[in-house]
Structure formats: structure tokens, C-alpha cells
Image (cartoon, rainbow, N blue to C red; front, side, top):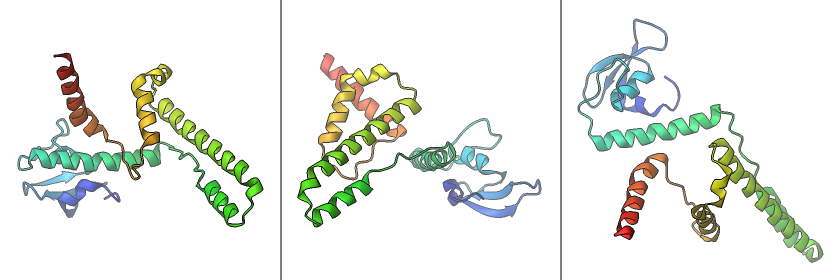
Length: 189
């Protein structure tokens, strides 16, 4: 079993399968049926993914399937970030610490230039992150002219919501899409 694969938590591992390799015998906690195979078959069984030569779990509720899909998506995102060569953009937090140290020493003559340098470095870091998002998602550059994009960036810059986490793909394609569709339809009436 690979470390961190979330759906194994809903199966009882009954040991190695006779076929060998990475195949194991597992029992589903929802339907209490026994199967053999790898994590791919566990996912197909629990998430009701057809085409993997395994019976789909009939005892799991749709809400539970959605929760399991979210768990799996989070795991996949973490895993793909590690495997895809994702390079985190270096932070300027070290520079901020240096600025605070300078304040403690009361070096007022250099203070403004240090703060200006840090502000410039922060802005450059954010620009790099925006660029990386556009490049890695193959978003056309003219999307940066979109007034909704500019409104989003301005709102984020002006908000004091520390700890804000952007919606995941599931929430974007379901809840938020439906809300926006309803808003537009009500506007057009």
C-alpha cells in the first residue's frame, strides 16, 4: 500500500493476493464484499468509475461518494505537485524579517530604501506566481485583460481575509457555476 492513499482507509486489507505484484485482497467497509487488485480498483469501486473490471459499490451514498472524490482529488493534487516538478516560487519572507531587524536597530536612514526594495520584491514574486499560473494552465495572455480577472486580483489585494483558500475544481464546476448561472439568468429577466 502506498503511503497516504486515502481510499485504503475504507477497505480492510486482507493480505497479498495470489496474483502477486502489488495486488492485495481487500474488503469494502460499505458493502462488505471482497475483491483483489491495486488502488486503481479500490478507486473504481468506491468512486463508481466504470471500465476497471470491478463491481461498483452499491451501498455507498452519493454524498459519501462526493466526499471521497474530494479526498482523492486533494491527494492527487499533492502527489502531482511533487511529481510534476512543481517548483515553489521563493518567498520574500526572509527579506521581511531583515526589515524588522533593521527597525529594531533604528537604522532610519536605510529604512525607506529597504521597505521599497521589499515591496518591489513582493510585487515581483506575485507577478511570477501569476505568470506561472497562466503558463502552467495554458491560459491565453489576453485573459489578463478580462475585467473579471482584474476585479478578482483587486479584490484579493484589498481583502484582509488571512487563510483564504480558493475553491477546488469540484466547487467551481458545481456550486459556483450554478450560482453564477442563476445570477446571470435573473439579471437577464
